[in-house]
Length: 60
Image (cartoon, rainbow, N blue to C red):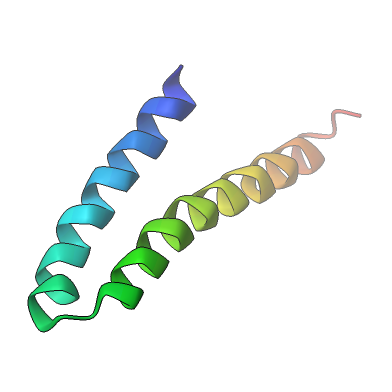
């Protein structure tokens, strides 16, 4: 449940960020791209960090 709440928080931040940077300038494509890209980026880094932490701990 914690992971989903983080993704929702990132989505909300992305929408607010995109509104002020993209939609106010009429750049709808950038806004949609930002909404898709940011949660995917979070998932990628959270998985890679978890794998690194497991490898560094010596657990197999």
